[in-house]
Amino acid sequence: MQRDMMKAVTFNQYGDVDVLQIADVPKPQLQPNTVLVRVHASAVNPKDTFIRKGRFKRFTGDNFPQLVGFDFAGEVVESSLENFTIGTRVFGMLEGWHGGTCAEYILVQANQLAHLPDTVSWVDAASVPLVSLTALQALRDNAKIQSGMRFCINGASGGVGSMAVQIAKVYGCHITAIASESNHDFLSDLGADICLDYRQTDIRNSDQHFDIFFDVFGNTHFRDIKPILSRNGTWVSTVIKQHVFASIALSKLSSKSAELVVVKAVPEDLSQIAEWMVDGQLRAVIHQTYTMAEIAEAHQQQQSKHTCGKLVITL
Image 1: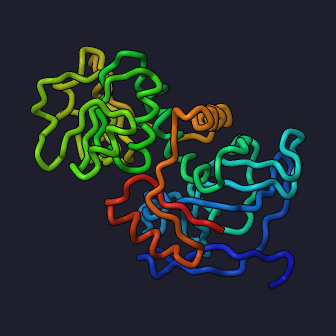
Image 2 (image 1 turned 90 degrees about the vertical axis):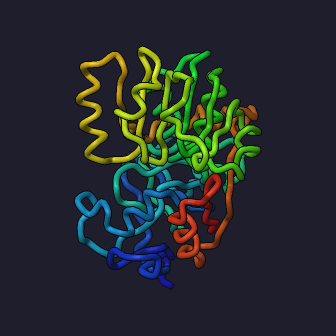
Image 3 (image 1 turned 30 degrees about the vertical axis):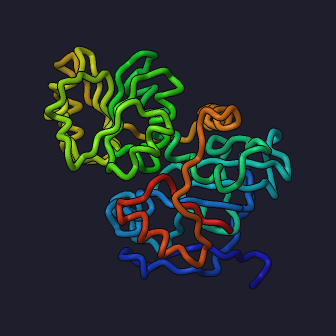
């Protein structure tokens, strides 16, 4: 392989996991206000599988090959930023719809990364950016979380859910977690006060009222959850669907609000996540690790919807 090329996971058409392949692609060249990172670990998110299938073709277009991966942890090998010198440990998340972190190197803009403490491993660091930023921004910015609030989360055992449970506990909330019964002990250990099995309990019939209802799975509607929200309660969704936008508009007429979290890479938020990890208030939840050559199996596991925590690719 030429010195200006690198290995990366790519796909040349939208489709199932068999479109994924490892290919030689041009190594990114350093640009102003960027760093070149040698990637030690990446991660798989539902976003990766949706993009690969062509669900967001409107945003990703038809230019191929496309690269995959949005989370990363690694070390700086070239830099045009004074505060990120060569050898600096970093982690972060690419914004937008075009990935690229499941590769030997990635070019990262200044607003998409933060320093990684020495005590946090590459695998743990790569597992948290997208899911922890989604959870933090949904709770803090969309739902205005405060200590003492009653928080309910639908889809608590996945990547975003496992982060949200821990972050809600940091904020001092009472947590009701909805997930399969096999994950209840795990969620209690993360900080959930009450665990409900979605197969046995219809949360719409709950006699409890919640200040925040966080729908990670995207299978509830605001109109159905509204009766169990407190007077100024908030329903937050992670999915881009028409009913979510309609609910947001209609909720403007009510004291109860519907929100859509649109995650952004914020260095200060990444630093906060790292601080919580160092302090032991937030821990990475790893379902399984894979090599780059096993990327198809990782995507297959992600779209099974039975993943507890995160899937990490080691390079």
